[in-house]
Image (cartoon, rainbow over the protein chains, first blue to last red):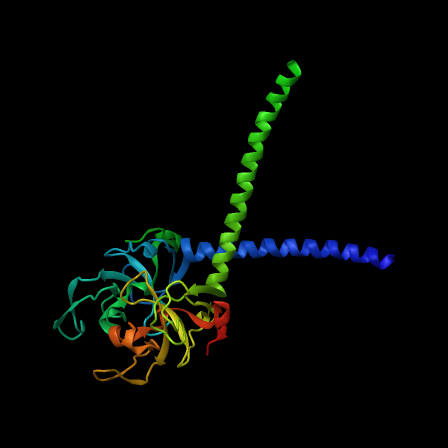
Length: 166
Length: 169
């Protein structure tokens, strides 16, 4: 009789625990969906986007909707999964869409010999704002559009430079 | 007579409230279910149909448009992007941004691949993918090596139709 009562009590506790866990799980799922499909914050650093983004690191907000509908345009700052190392993300500016013809200087430190390319179908040309210290399409060529994972919208940190990115 | 009128007055708004409540509950359930489903299919595994015969005889061995194979795709491999030769993977097309293909990895970074025209080296962070049915497959022989970052999951087995349930790799 007594253990039956214990069992009942235990069942109540288990039910409550299950409810708590399911609330937490739903919350984590909501975070995942927001982060993957709507908006997320990223910490970017490095010299490759220098006049636009800081060397020491900025926190930016990136939205993940427009690239799913093919709405990435010229001049957008995008987050791209690096074609040479898939675990890294790089932040660059889109300078050419499919079919565009563009020319760039082969080695800006040495001379002004320029190379001309046509961006193939389904690809984009990405380049850092700092021509002298950026590994980008000039090294690895145009990247597939599907490697784009987000478009930078706002800089939120440091607060002094809060504002939209262009 | 006054009693009946009173009833009508009371009943109508409460029925409205009931429907509103029901709609609200259904919306809430659908929203929660959708969020959980998307998270599971992004993080853990999902089931996708295989279209076309580019991977026959592994998938879709006979041409039968209404009996497509459904395969289980696991997503844990996306945490570290470690793949091996022989893995069957789902990846986004490098040329058409809405398409996804299922092919087998034939060459890993640094390996030499002899395609029909010449011998090329697979660059760092890329892989060489080919369909099992060489005759009708659009793969790396057409568009070259693909970045590993395009891979969206690894196929771990066939789950439908029942007589074809099997493990891959």
